[in-house]
View (cartoon, rainbow, N blue to C red):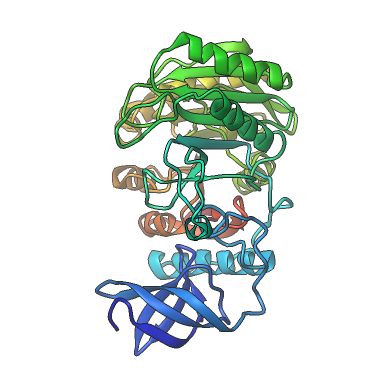
Length: 465
């Protein structure tokens, strides 16, 4: 099969971990986006790799019974919500399957039955944070191009997948609730009417770069406008408009970023109106979230995830707990009242400061937090100073734990490890090492991101007798 070839009737028989449908022709794997098992389609080959082909559907001969009608006009273009074309029950089934396949195939361990995945009550409008990008040269749809008409080229929306310089202008996003869409549309309209320059990522010129909207279950609302250079007259123009148009915003901020990328973790975020933070509520706990703070983007489902982690930990009140990759201390504070003491470790110093504040806000005085590189900080000296943990909770990034950290945990031999992961493949890799001395006794997948292929998974390991 060559690039450009057409496969007349390709049956989709599975779903890849990247979310694409999987078929086979002449023994070769073909990945096709926006398809579901049971689809039979005419597929054009658009990519040829050593071990697989990539294609897209030209026409369906038969549609899967698991298909659903995508609810977003931007489906298939902006790169988000890639599984809108599948019914939610089917999404959960395939996420469960990916957890099981990864853990059984990659860990090489004897595993218990995996508990049924916990689905999300909300399957749209569930995110508490979105970042929209300004572009002076937005992506035109096929229909717009074929119309032959002139089109406004400014855009405020999301990147096309794998295209750093191409932005899809978003009319309505189904990921974040009101007033997120209203704010984005109003900001774009005002900027266009006042000819405020949009950023050109290739030339690295222009004023408007990025718009961040953060919402909370408390109804607090944070908006951050990122601009490329300091023009106080333009800044005041935009910020006064936003402040007047949306009085419900409780934290209105801006950041001047002259760098070549949109990250502002190392830059000053300036307060224009309101407070410099928003407050989130989880059960009876409150969490202070600043402009740079990390917080799980699905607030309600994060509560369910942490309840699973706490249940797996099974704390009785006399345990020393280590919370690794603690972030802003959400899990640490969530379990602290059931433990003797919780020690949290995190690489980002600003996050550790937030974690300390969150303990103080909630009247929790049995937590200690430390900033440092996990593989360097967590060693014999640290353990001798703070004590050997009875229970370890670890929630690493997608890359999993550093091999030195994984081996240290195996050597440390705490009674229990609760491993929370957003990537079952790297979790399975780490479990293979921990399996030297631990047994996996419970596994619970949790769906944090409906309409996507991503899945969280919680594993309880107990020290082998």
